[in-house]
Every structure is written in structure tokens, then in C-alpha cells.
Image 1 (spheres, rainbow, N blue to C red):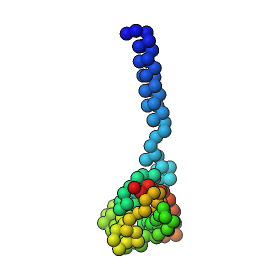
Image 2 (tube, rainbow, N blue to C red):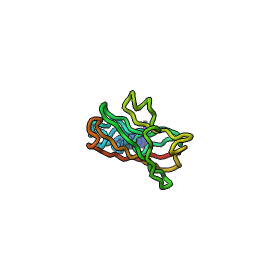
Image 3 (cartoon, rainbow, N blue to C red):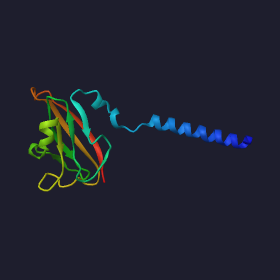
Image 4 (cartoon, helix red, strand yellow):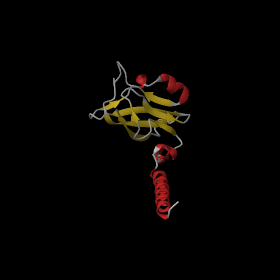
Length: 142
């Protein structure tokens, strides 16, 4: 291999390693949400912050055992919509501690409007309704 070729190969390898380091440092969000990982009541946000979902995908919160929640949706077109408890998915709620809303016919939202929408979950221990916390996160709708 000629000297010029070795220099080019070395430069390309250095560039590749630099890009890998940069990608690792920039991260992708996901599980590093301090308000979720630092809160024993919250197992996960559905979807995660800044995720992209479809217009009829579900949104909600996954809680530790012994907690309950209510949801309010803020749509990209300026509406603030409390989700009635009877429109949460009962199968998730009863069995898994997940409080999930899926838009549909006859519900407070038939579909999520495109662009950025947000959810505010109000959570409390089942045995102390006065000990209330809230968490808010946003997601993109395509």
C-alpha cells in the first residue's frame, strides 16, 4: 500500500470512530427520562417522550402496583381534553396498572390531530387520593 493510500485509510477510520463516539454521546432519549426513572410510581410513558405515533395509537402511563391515574390530552389544534375514566382501556387498567386511551368512534377524540400532542397524567396512590403528582410528555402524530 502506498503512503497516500495509508493516510486516506487512516483518516477514514478516524472519521468513522469519531462518528461512532458522537452518536453514542448524542443518545436517543428513550429510557433516560429522569422524571420516570427517578419516580417509583411510574414504570413507563406510553409512548415515550417525543416518539412518533399514528393517529389512532394508544397513549397513557404504566404505573407501579398500588397507583391510579387520570389522563388529559392537549392536542396540536389547541384543545385540552380530559379523558373520562370509562374511555380508558379497562383490560390494561385492571390487569397491568396501565392507564391507556386509544382514540376511536364515540370517544372524546376519534383521532389525534397531526403534529405535536401532549398528555398530562395525574397519578396518586390508591390509598391516598390527596397525594397527587402530575407528569406531562409530548409525542408526534403522523
